[in-house]
Structure formats: C-alpha cells, structure tokens
Image 1 (spheres, rainbow, N blue to C red):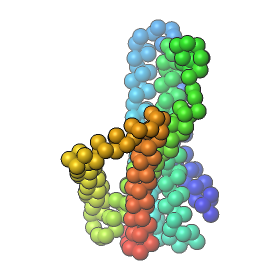
Image 2 (image 1 turned 180 degrees about the vertical axis):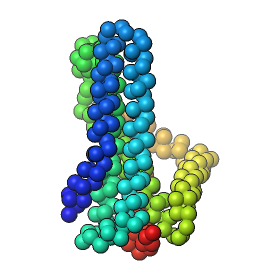
Image 3 (image 1 turned 90 degrees about the horizontal axis):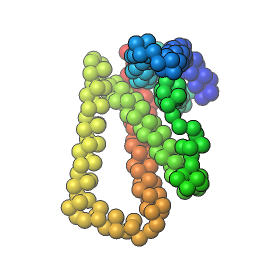
Image 4 (image 1 turned 30 degrees about the vertical axis):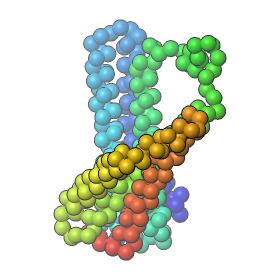
Length: 259
C-alpha cells in the first residue's frame, strides 16, 4: 500500500514539476548556445529567465511540500484519506519520501541546468579528478566520508520536512487560525533549538568539555577524528527526525481534528 500511496503522490506532484524542469533545461540549453556564440543581450535575457525558473522551482517545492501534507491529511481531504486502510506511519512516510525525492531531484535539475549554461567553460572531468602529480586522489576514505556526508544531508532534509509536518500537526490543537498557530509553532521550535544549541556551546566552552573532547579526538588519526564528528552530527539529526516524527504521528493518531 505504501508503494501505491507514493505512486499517486509522485503523479500529483510530477504534473507540476516536470513542466518546470523541462522549461528550465530548455532555457539553460539556449543560454549555453548563446554563450558559445557570444551573443551578449540574448544571453543576459536567457540567464534572467533561468534564474526566475530556478527560484520558482524552489518556491514550488516548498509550497507543495506543505500543501500536499496540509490538504491531504489536515484539511477536508483528510476525511477521505483517514478512511483508507493505511496506517498513520505509512501516510507520513509516503509524504516524507516523495517530498524528499522531489527536493533532491529539484537540486539535481538545477545543478544540471547551471552546468549546461556554463559547461563550455569547465575543465575536462579527467583534469578535475586528477591530482597535481597526475594520480587519482579519490581514496576509500574519501568515498566513505562522501557517503557519510550524503547520509547527513539526506537526514537534514528529512528533519526539515518533518519539522514542517510537526508544526502543521500542532495546528490541530486549535479550531481557528491553524496556519497562524502552525507558523507560531515553527518559530517556537526553531528558536528553542537555537537556544539549546547556544546553551550547549556555552556550557561546553565554560566547563572545558569541548576542549577535552578535542584533545580526545586528536589522539586518533585525522580520518578517525572526522568520523567521530560526522557520526555525532548524524546522531543529533536522527534524534531531531525522531522527535518531529513522534509529534506528527501522535497528533495524527490521537489528536486528529480535521476541518
């Protein structure tokens, strides 16, 4: 059932994203051609159009991430959605995964469009991949760190989306002004996280905890030290994901209040 939920979610969002992606790639290709031909005015116009499309894509991604969750689960459509023989977990996960995929695809498309526009000025891939001595510098440690970084960034994306879901779900605590309450919840949660971070840093510096930890990490190799920091960062983001997911699930399963 999860695959079916994701299928229809992909189709609903794809009807909006695919034309935007196609338009951006076409305009980027035209921009690249104008650049090769040294046509200054057409190139400037096409670059401006590309920038507007790029901004538009990210705005649409943000709006649809919110709209699809709000309309399908918290608004009038929720009466139909909640009657489906699907668990609350699958509803949340399907929304989360599809929104995350479209966010990632949007970034890939935008990066690809930029490369198309300026690709004629980039060095060959073989030059980029080689070190100064002519040998390839990509090592197993570098690959491992890159994989960790990708995992961290994906978890950060999950955390950001789940934060939006949690804030929207908290809006069900009231019957009126739910969007305003949801926005207020977002401000409160993000402010609280910033305060907790500031307090943690202050206490760590004042008590010498950070210095002790740094001295402990310096006892290992540079690679192992980086692993320690990366796994700590991944653990923190995982905790945030779990907290935001728990809030969303609790509100949808125990405090459901549709409009």
